[in-house]
Image (cartoon, rainbow, N blue to C red; front, side, top):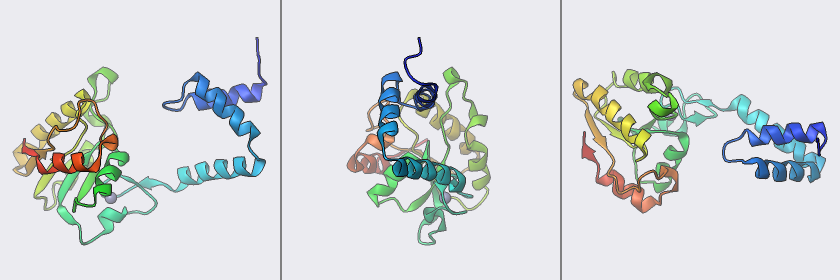
Length: 198
Ligand code: ZN
């Protein structure tokens, strides 16, 4: 039996397809949206479409940005010879918040996961290797300490080693399976300072 109108069902379906939104949350959000003033709904819809149309990948590090180069890559004061490899833009933001890291980043947009069928070709690894053809002194691998993050770190380490470029891995003071973005700044800095050679 169809309890709601077709339009509401469609809205619930779309919302339920978003990460972290279960069936119950999707219903709650759908009814909340319907009860919102029309102008606010229009503004929200516009912001979503505009973000989708204007946000792109940085030409250098592949983080999400409005410009061709993100603010970090465009900053000449940063050490462009040190690249920190992270899984996503949220992890980059977490390290940027510490204000202590002076190098640049490389955003993989994922991690290798044989279980989910995500291979090296599915993340921005080729792009990283291309960047290493420039003058790079160190690559710091700051993928998460999950199984996928560790697998990715090991893979990248093996890939870079033969180039002679220094490869390090952040210390695992980070709780296992913990997403980098949820870890406080002190722990992040300690992990960075305690990094070890791969
Ligand atoms: Zn960038």
